[in-house]
Structures are given as C-alpha cells and as structure tokens.
Image (cartoon, rainbow, N blue to C red; front, side):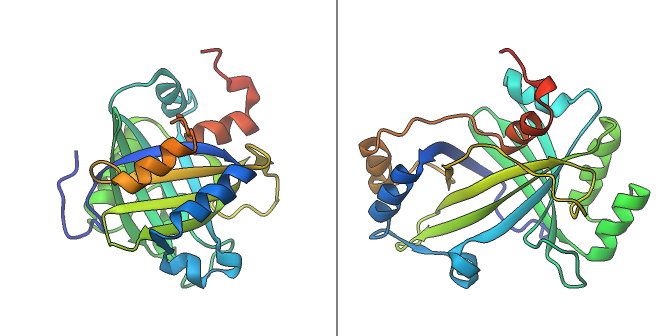
Amino acid sequence: MLQRRAVTEEVPWRFEYKYQLSRLQYYRLKNNIVPFCEPDLYTRKAVGNRYLVRSLYFDNDQFQAYYEKIEGTFGRIKCRIRTYSDELQKDTTLRAELKNRWGEAIEKYSTFIKRRDYESFMKKRHWPGNNPILQEFERIYYLRAMKAKVLVEYFREGYNPRDRSDVRITFDHDVRSCYTDTLFPLANLYKYHHYHMVILEIKCRTKQPAWLSKIVRNHGLKYIANSKYTQGLEAVRPDLLSPY
C-alpha cells in the first residue's frame, strides 16, 4: 500500500454511495439539495454546467479486475488514466489514478501527469521519474499483465455543501463506453450504459450529514453497486456478462 506523501492531492480514504436516478428523480432531488449545496468550480465554468470526464481503464486478458468486482473481492484494485478533455493538447489535464476498495471504503491515490509522460507510458509502458503513485501503478500493471481495455466517459455535474462539510455530490449524465486502448480514440464507437438514467454519487470521509441522509430517504433511493468500468465493459463486451 502506498504511503501518503506530498504528491497525493487528497486524503485517500473515503466512502462512496451510488444511486441510479430517472430523469424525474434527478430533477426533484436536485431541487432538494439546492438550499444546502452550490455547484463546484468546474461545473460553474463548464458549458451547460456539465463537464466531460473520460477514463481509460486497465485490466488483463483474463479480465481479473472485472471478475473481482463481480465477485465482490475484498481489497480489489483499479488502475485508470483520466482526463477532462476530448482531445490531447500540450496543456491537457491528465491524471493517473489507483483505487482500492476495502468493503464500503475507498482508498484513492491520484497524481497529475504531463502529456509527454502519458505518451511515454502508452508507448514504452514505463513512467519516467520517481513519483510513488506512478511507480505503484507500473508495478501493478506488470504484476497483473495489464493492458488498456475500455474507455468510459460522461458529463459530470458536481456540488459542494454550502457549510463546507467534507461531502461531494455528483450527477453523471450520458455515461457511455468504447472498447479501445487509448484515451483519445479516433473513431466514435461508444455504447451508452443506461438511456435516460442519471448516476448520483455521494462521496464523504465519514457519514452523510443528516440533511443529505433525509433527502435520500425521502426519495426512496436504494444504494447500488455501480462500477462504471464493469458496466462499460459489459456494454462493449456482452460476452463477458457474468450470470451471478
């Protein structure tokens, strides 16, 4: 496990709660959180108040990460490279991320990477420098014989509580995926996961605040396992769909 260092950009431990919403539920719930929350900086700056999130996920040819998720393996790990742009330019924001799940708790490590570092890894399968997150990413990559497998993208709408409590609420729209080995594919071969559905995610360090728990209860929302990687892979590779 990685030790926390200055290179990490956030406290690694958190809890995530995910829900699938119909369009009607989305509008009603959004109206209910407005008195308590405000759009985050990225949402306020984005066209239409929704910003692109694009992630390239890695797995091996046996789809170990996929089946560990399906089976609920404790301590499973996920490797991905993320961007918020649909094209690669000199100043494109890129991040390499590692996510461990221990029961309901998520341990996430993330670091910004430069364009040349991304291109070097995709070509040579090696991260330059001595960044501990990238070193661990590379170690797991080779230990599990990983390859880039699927690209997942969506438009995110994020909110932060007005009281500055340590909670983050996001609505993810138009979640779709394609089977590719690059973060910037030339062809648009995406398949949507769920038409007319919005994914609500609540992320917090401890428990949800009382006002948020009450809103979730009042809307009758049920917590679901909602791995975007799992659903993305099943959308583009239905032959992998587990009967369990």
